[in-house]
Length: 318
Ligand code: NAD
Image 1 (cartoon, rainbow, N blue to C red):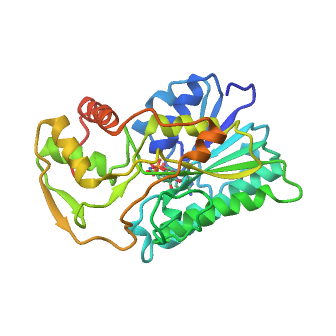
Image 2 (cartoon, rainbow, N blue to C red):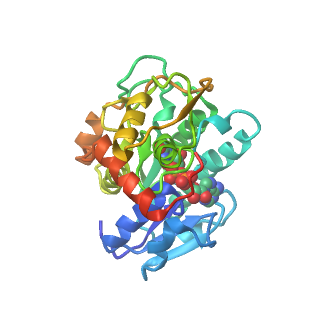
């Protein structure tokens, strides 16, 4: 989507945001990257920071004056947020409401003020919960099973509400990402933890029996869907980004063992509240509106993540 007008990526220092920014720069876009983890050097952004079309802005979205940053912007990709289910129970929920709900409202409000044509917002499969068995189409009634899921649902919905504002010229696409993995995956996520456990011999904590199933989605496929969302025909849409194939944690561990040639030592912990047995996308709407289907299978994606881990000599805590 090359354009003479710049685009904004929020959460740019994060796992998905940094990959998206790299892809946009490679397409010839000028990118303003906002994250509160800037301007500290962040290894995720090593390539972006060397690029002449990248402008880093260290700011907290819940506080910063956004309209001066959004003036003349073509598309805002709003990926900033506090991820993770387990810490969302208890007092930390205040931070989830601040960064996932309030920050999203402020981003949508600034898009309205600055007449930004398109807002793409990162939502999550966790909005579905487990009221009924999947696959989940976007028309399924959301029933989040964790405070995190509630905050993501509120964040996407507040952006969609802005699309319906009478003064709005901003169309909104909320992407419900299904468990994303690949190089630079967050340290708390399963696939990286499993690969690091195999490499280090440190036991992996497995929550529950390992029978939970996830619709794992490789990072380059997620970036492709997110780029397509910038130009998809839409006024206000929610779209799943998941391939429609769920894989069990046990199968992930077997694949990690095959790829590394080592055992994944493990300790079993009780399942945690809000951990649903399965996430599974119905990908039909993504195919229809984004022309998207995933290209990277689990074994191939895990092999690429392993190659990155080995190359970058990531510390081995699991
Ligand atoms: P991440 O933690 O790696 O990146 C999020 C970034 O947002 C961080 O760099 C953080 O500093 C920034 N941020 C958070 N609050 C902020 C604030 N108030 N102001 C400015 N910056 C702020 O997470 P990720 O895995 O890259 O996820 C990106 C988005 O995708 C999140 O919104 C997350 O909820 C969503 N998501 C991720 C997954 C996944 O599997 N990784 C799945 C579903 C949804």
